[in-house]
Length: 180
Image 1 (cartoon, rainbow, N blue to C red):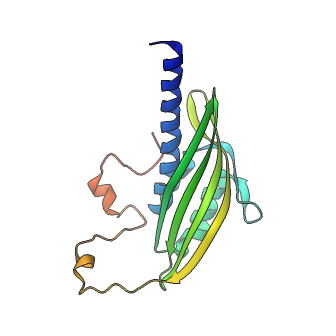
Image 2 (image 1 turned 180 degrees about the vertical axis):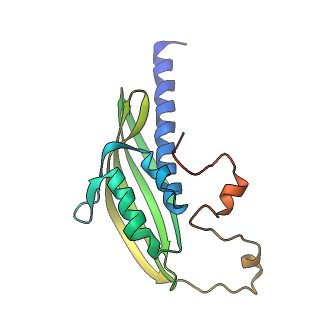
């Protein structure tokens, strides 16, 4: 394999790893797995939400699990467009997201945001070194109560925020804890 082709293949593998970091963030939030989220950041990584919140990635994890997520019975985070640039041991991305949050009283918040990420490879390991977040839009609504007489609701298993979620039974390779 020539050098150009080898370099292209290596960049693709790096981009795949960066994509896995983004997926781990979403799963960590939705399944309430702080160790998984913490593992995508370097210890000195910055999490920057502008005037709303600023600190390290580890502090962000502590904050959302102590002071934020408890107000939602369900969250779902989806990654849409991802664009990665890789140069040596550094990479950057812009990632578009949609997030859904439902409170026990039925209030729903759906929002679109973008993250501006910087990644580094340190000692052979890729992680996030900086994550900036901006909101594109947000919509608040009231959930429609589930009608158990409707067949569509009878066949679905509920999505749960913690380790009781069906995904842990169905997908034994997806264990709680740090990303491997």
